[in-house]
Image (cartoon, rainbow over all chains, first blue to last red):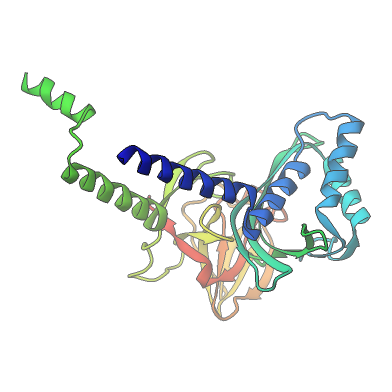
Length: 165
Length: 166
């Protein structure tokens, strides 16, 4: 008798796990986009032109057709097209021989059905093309919108100024 | 024999309800203590050298300034989006004060501040600026970094997450 209950309990637990895996929450989908952003923006040593093109193409697909960048102290602020974002990423990759972008303390808020705000600390580490070690951290606010196909796309990136000289 | 028995019971304890309760309480207490009160952190970068060197380990003690308040030259952790990555800096000025650097010397409200923790004073020059209401002015100890590359400045006092344990 006990064995039956155990099997039922096991099936229920497995069902729950499968539903969580197969039907991820909106928050999980957003976090997945952030981890993809981290993956496609990073660079490990030399990469072929083909690999670079594919990575940049994948990176571009994470962004909406128009993206607002707000970065005090940088010349990037303004509205950019997806192509411009890809070009910016390509330029950044040329400036580094290796780079890793990681996000920490990611917290997601979904105020509307199709809009989300993400607060996170972005950390960029790597070696510049001149051989200089780089370790930059920024407090970031990312905005995402859900498109017609249910994909969350980045529509805004804001660098929060933590220290103001 | 007794020692052997103790060792055996330490590594292979009898799973009684009381033992499981003790282990659970210990695990929850450790999570609360190291997750919210005394957060373990590795120092990265050379901004606070020589006081805190790159790669050293420390703890962010959240309650360090809860009872006595911040004082000039206290070292603080500045929170970014959360406690995962924080900036380690030294408080040099408070709201309403005017702070500047003259050939590496820290000057607050026209008075030079002694900084015994510096290895080298450097040659920073920064025109005077007033610290806004609700803010503090923080700087790293390593003044050998060119001023343009060093992250320092004023930040809301609410961003102070605590201080290093040592």
